[in-house]
Image (cartoon, rainbow, N blue to C red; front, side, top):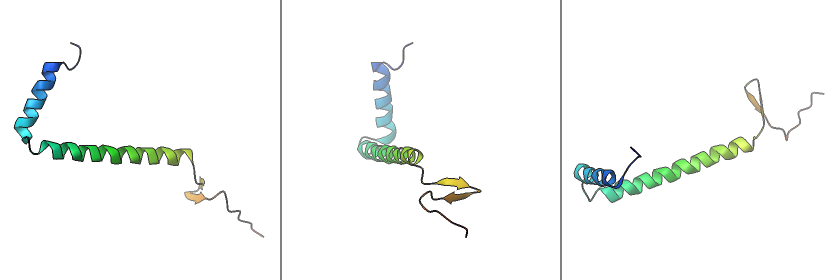
Amino acid sequence: MGGIQGWHLVIIIVLALLLFGAPKLPGMARSMGQSLRIFKSEVRKMKDDDEDPKGETIDGHVVDPKTDEKND
């Protein structure tokens, strides 16, 4: 009882070939790879946004720390 073994992998591959057919598998693998790349880049952008805040939120409004509003 220690995870996936070699014969489990063979059964999964045979089932995939029977369900989807050999010609469709490369296209499916390519689209999955593209989806994973997009997902990784979006996660990376979210992490970058968290590390570099653009301003503070006050009462639902974003205040840019670079601008200095003066009420004279």
